[in-house]
Length: 493
Image (cartoon, rainbow, N blue to C red; front, side, top):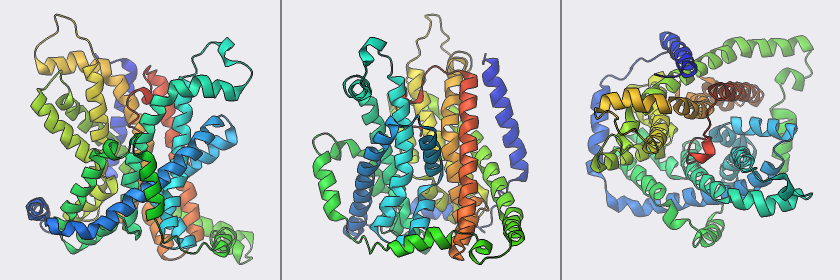
């Protein structure tokens, strides 16, 4: 049977999701959604390989931005990890990583324009913060040496004990984060950067689904072959080539930056020397008309997607475990989950938006498929590590319900809570596609060039993400799961 703590947590989250379903908008507004789905599916057989050469520049741009951004982010993140215990550093990094890469891109578009620098900064800022946190956690987990080895020099202790011991885990997480950087760079095309996402967005809007499939397959090939073209033998040539390939950094105008922080994001009543009562009225209007609605819908979408993710993970992990399936089924299931995991939520949501129309349905499906695939794959790995008794049942359903699930369920919940903050960030950004989450109002504020309102909404988004992160940590502490995330493949943050 499941432990009482795990059961209590599950019941609470399931109840919240059920209530959220009551208020959520899952309507289908397209006239023939399944006809559109059929068109999209059949377009796979209409791919024109001759289109590949014209997409190569976008492919190289995607790779180059991801490589350079990860190089800078990993260096910054590593040094920040060494001082992560500082309260000011932790709070600053929590704020930075709580803002999605697309939001950062939209901000830097206002300052630097549509160029490579905007794309790099949009990845570097949040990724440096994420890497700093995870690197710090990995180093903390390897703080297992006796006190007499620590000596008086903290630098020597790190260089000769902690870092060498933790190095394989640091490299493993950096590889995974590079995969994430490729996904993030690709979707920057949806705001105008000429990565693969730029052509993907154009093909989607024009209904050229055969081109969409071609772009997706090219992207999957990049992800699947990362360890072939980025390894200890190739990393330096790849970095150098990426640095030389990137251009179009535009003209960095510090005047734009100064104007942005001293004028554009300052609340309009303050900027125009209005009385304090008008500042309150400005805030109250935004709070009632946008913040309350945006926060409510963001939480609805997050909690529904979290539970849907849990159901998908619980349904799929046996398919990739040798305890339940044969090698053929495991291979097919593994490919299926890798494809879902490799496809950014934003792209999945954009696809479902074309099929079902604007509502929470496309976003919820996208979040469920992407995150469920990640957790399902990890739980399959966890299941393979279980040692059964000699008299264990041979019936697969009984093995699943009474032997495996009770033994891995607490760890499963911990994995789910690690993804909770990510799901919240994605729920906010998916508002750009038309769902009235915080991202919808942020995008509207940018379109109207009301950057003061944009900044206020971003601060609210950040606070919401930090709250979710704190609740998630408390939930994991309550469950008292022994195995940490950094020892499980580092695939959750």
